[in-house]
Length: 208
Image 1 (cartoon, helix red, strand yellow):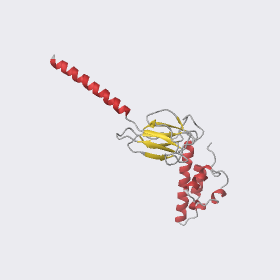
Image 2 (cartoon, one colour):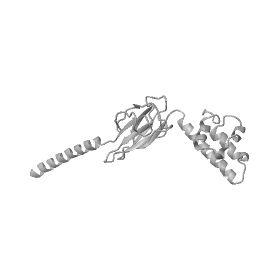
Image 3 (cartoon, rainbow, N blue to C red):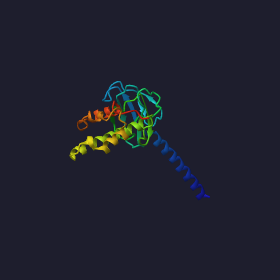
Image 4 (tube, helix red, strand yellow):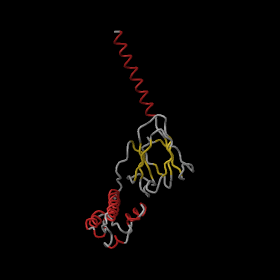
């Protein structure tokens, strides 16, 4: 009987310890707050836990300060909704690196600056806003086009006579205009920003 009572007491003690440990771990989180400047110092809002699954409407914010914890918690990602969407209806972009132990200021660049945000546990899923996947594919294709164009030049070949490359342009990037428009662009000396401008500008047709 004594052994049975001891076993019962031990199990009860373990259950209590497990409950307390689980509760303690559940209370461990890191915190963030949105700010108006690039340095996480001006007009910062209230602290929000990264474990908060709610939609955070933060129009016009330019940075996000992450207050870490000494005890590492699960990684979290910040899902960014597109400009004009204050209800977190879809994922436009995503930023990882939250939930750790470090204090960090995250600048919200143009592509990360939305009107609403929400935190999810784990990494970033694929964008799910209408047209986002197609735009991403066109962007990757445009980068590949420029690389192949430059490779032709390095190989001593005129890229304007590379029929396979020109067909790649038509098939993957959907040129809006005539083939002559391709030759009006100095692909070899374009910056990344200019490249992206072409991708969303006059040279790229909308996806059907």
